[in-house]
Image (cartoon, rainbow, N blue to C red):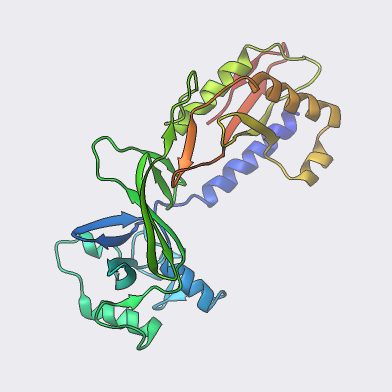
Length: 297
């Protein structure tokens, strides 16, 4: 597999460079006297429902910073501010990127103009009632040493300790606090995702690998909701696997990894208090003598 592996790795790296995404600025939710960053795209749900094919708002093209003079950290070209008033969720402002963090005050007139452009006259003194939203909003608890334990690299984040508020058609129905990390006895620590691949590779390196099969490849190892390895797969499509890989070699490599990792137990990761699974990327290079090296980057 080595020649194909090198070719596909080069293609993958070029593709990754082209699709590199920038971290995005959050929206905000005002609860009592606190203004808290929130990584839940609520206004976008309304815009998508209103016009699924539209990619512009206020003349700004989403995901195309060339069309407006703002940072690539704000593809939308704006940020939204929400507020809970009498157990109802309202959109109170639509502001320019970074405006809330600037030294100057929010341009309220410009905000009202943007809201009117979208919602016409469907607003009152509180703002726009967010009756299109049913779901959950999560944000970090303000406590000491509260860590961000997962981030998609662009927008969505999971914090170890969170508050989750639930809405039904814009009306608050429930509010709870959650701990999103469960330590399992003798479990492998998962707080830092970047270190998990090294822990997985340590298990694989202790195995004896068949020199007749070349397992030099990129893999995704799934840790399920219980903290166990539930799936191993290569990072290619079914068509690519059929076209480029020998079935016996493929089956050997996948089963070898699954069997080597079957006894591993990891701590449990949660999102909004519910256990979740996640994929861990690993890359293996196998020498002719059967020994493997960790090529994970």
